[in-house]
Length: 575
Image (cartoon, rainbow, N blue to C red; front, side):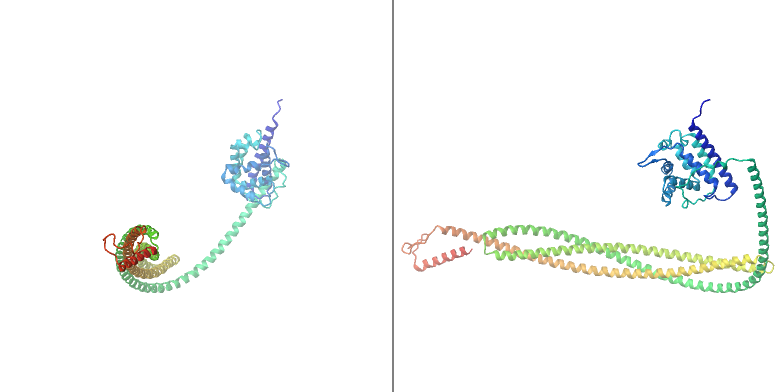
């Protein structure tokens, strides 16, 4: 005879044990009729059998200290293949009492059974055999067809409801041994089970009959109490009808008063709205005019800035020319150094004044930008005010509609009250329904009245807010007027500074003309000095006649010419 493969025999035995354990667990759980605990013996045997099935054909992994052979590796792989299994993996890792991978695997199986997704998770593992080959041998149960059969059997466990406490159990040190006595049956055991089933059925029937008797007794007592309460309630209802009539009359009077008050409020609100509309239109016109004036002022300021920038460039060019002239004058003339220093001080003052003018212009430009931003914000506020007025008109319309509905409801309630009063004498049973309906209608009317009062309060608050906003806008317009005045004052100051600048320019031009004249005089003096350098005064005996006009010299004329020559020489030396 041909010997069978031992691994195939192991797989067949494990498959049969899995069938028996799953079948026995489902039958016992259905007969038990309650949620299963962790102490239930068929459930414990099922986990032992599943542990043996998952351990079959596991590869031994060598670690640093010992050999490792656990089923936690392939079960941990389920998280990557099935995203919903991440919650189980995270909860298993967070359990404080688990220290070994085997304990984590046992907790994972229990949580998967409670979620009723054990078959789905293991099906993902069996499909991915390439990944399972890292953990299992080729002849393992999870790599063959028997694994797929077991996964198909696990689908039946979705019928079972289990409530397992994983935190309290010591899953690390449990010993997984299969108890075959639970699956071996004798004839006596079968007879005892049938007797037990019959006795349990008889006891269930007895309990059912007793519960029915208790329920009937309770219903009879409750009916008696209801009859008494109905009699009392009928008497109370008759009294409440009279009270309700009085209340209806009072409510009608209050309704008339509320209508009159509502009409007055509507008139006042319409008047306020008209006044606010007129104010808003006037303010809009003023804003438009002020905005046009500000735009013109802005354009004029920009033109003035351009002109001043051009003037500044011209002044800088002239200053460069004057500086060059200054260097020439320093080399030529030492006497005019004091005047030139004073002129430099004036130039520095002019530059400072120019910088101040620039700063003033920049401030004016920033103020213009701020005024434009303020105009934009005010336009937005005006749009918001228009939206609020539209909302208020819509709310007033809704209030009118609700008042009309309330009047109609009151008319209908009065008609119904008349009909109910005529039928009260003949039909006492229908009084409860009618009174309940009236109470509901009264509650609705009261709620409507409260809502209308709240609407009135909100409208008054909105009107006050609009008044505050209008006062704020008026204050802002006053601020804009003050800014205009400041801007005009700054323009006047700017014009004054321009006049001063033009006067100083004219003074500088005059100084330049004087300097050019003095330069020419100095050059003439230099030429005369050069002509006199090679000449020597003759003696009085030798100089008897003038060489140019050939006239005779006298002692007085000779002394006069000598004094003039000495003066010119001394003046040249001083220069």
